[in-house]
Every structure is written in structure tokens, then in C-alpha cells.
Amino acid sequence: MADGYKPAGRPTLYFIGVTTGSSSIMRVFPAWATYLGLNDAAIVGIDFPLHAEPARYREAVEFIKHDPLSRGALVTTHKIDLFEACHDLFDRLDPHAALMRETSCISKSTEGLVAYAKDPVTAGLTLDGFLPPEHFTRTGAELFVIGAGGSATAITWHLMRKDRGGNVPRRVIVSDRLHERLSAIRAFHRKVETDAALEYVDATPAGVNDATLARLSPGALVVNATGLGKDAPGSPLTHAAQFPARGIVWELNYRGDLIFLNQARAQQAARRLQIENGWTYFIHGWTRIIAEVFGIDIPTRGPGFDEISRIAAEVGRP
Figure 1 (tube, one colour):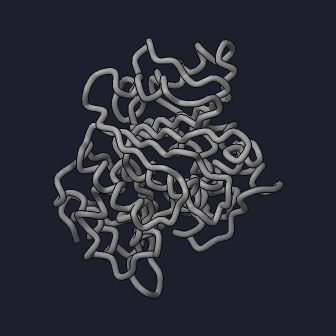
Figure 2 (cartoon, helix red, strand yellow):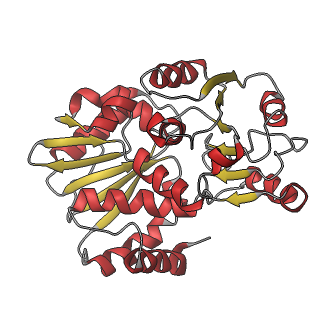
């Protein structure tokens, strides 16, 4: 048993993040567990600083692997770093985890410890829920994702694939301040068949994200996938930035200072923006992982999903 971890006394789902105690899931999970018949299940947070030492990730994964009542984990923020540190500890990688080199879900099966990348599924469910039909076909607009981590990888993969026909962004632009993240997502994109033009922007110089935003065409989708506003304070944009006319703005966070979201709201009427926060993404993200870890069926739409969403909003929405 790994040092520093106490064996679980009942079936336990871990939440590996940065500020897990502030997450709505700590209030939502018990209510969901009652509704789903998981009355004996618990959730426990494990907080690591951004880009923690690999040994810390390995200790957590080793503990989950060998503790009988530790059923699995949801991983946020650390998805890429944890995969790089621990991929050899898993008995199987699901195809998305192997392709994207990230872990957002840890689960156990008859095969042993399994790593999943659920973001391609959960990002897809969320995007398909709020994007207007054939949005990119009709507008010819771009996709600008600020941040090149695991969520950005999943979002770009979902929208840029050639099998979507003409409904792909004309150009996919990804920015980040970490060169290794840009290199990693560029290498991943080489594996994806797409008709979209691809661009990678070093966001280290001040104002680069603002300048990139300024050259987007009407209808562009702009995503804050940096974690700024939740995992660290601030926004990847300055207050001088101007969103594209009739643009769609997606803030992946639902809690924190949410400066990016407020910047978009300040321009919503003048720029005729459609604005989405991370709440539905939060629900899809957690329900897909709870379903995987506990081996139960949870609907992704319809009355059952509506009830899951109602419960979450009632007990946990900020």
C-alpha cells in the first residue's frame, strides 16, 4: 500500500485535481449516489499542484490499483501529466487514452487497472448539445482553443475529423504558453484525417491571444481550455480583447473567478455572442466516469439525464 493513503472502508471514487474541495461534485455525488442506488459509495479528493512530480502521480495510481475498495478516479487538470508518469502501471489503455496520451478516468475490470480518456466522449456530447446544426458548414468559421491540454485535444479531435463531412472548422487554431504542449497537440493532429487548416500559436508574448481573437471571422467558436479562472486566477485574454461577431464562446470552467466568462458577457449584446459555461460539460464528464467506474448505465439525454441534471443543479450549481 502506498505511503500516505488510507485504505478505503467502502467503495470509493477519487477525484484527482487541484482544488477538489471547492468542486460542486462534493455535494452532487452523494445526491447522485442515492438516486443511482450507489448508497454505500464515497468520493474523496486528491489535490496536486499543477505539473506535480511524477512520483506523486505514481503513488496515487499505485494506491488505487492495489486497494480493494478504491474503485477508480476522475482525473482533471493532470490528465496528460498523470498519463506520462503512470502509463506503465495500467493493465490496459482504452483506444482514446492510447491515441491522446492522457488519462481522465481510472477504472478496474477483469483486465485489471484501465486508463480511459473520456473527454472525446464528454466534449462531443456537450458540443453537439449547444452548437447550432451544421454550424461550420453554414458559417465557414474557425475554432480557436486557448490552451493545449487534454480538453483541447478532445475538442479539436471531435470537431476536425474528416468524417464530419463539411461541418468542420475552416481553421483550427490552438494557443498555449508551454511549447511542449503545442508540440504534443501538433503531433496528435498529424494522426487525425482532416480538411481543416491547422495553426499553433505561442501565447507567451503578452497580447497574442487578443491578436488571434481579433482576426477570427464571424461565428467562430472560442474556447477557454487553459484552466485560468479555476485552477489559477485570471484569464488568457486582456480586457481589451474583442470577441468575433456572432461568435460562440465556451468557458470550460463553471466555478472560480471566471474572468474569461465575464469578459464575454460584457460583450454579449454588442457582439451577439452565444455563451456557454462548463456546467453541462461537468455533468457529462462526471456521469460518464461514474458509469464506467461503478459499472452502471447512466443516460446521456432524455428524462433520465434531465433528472440527473436537475439533481445536480438543486444541490450543487454555484
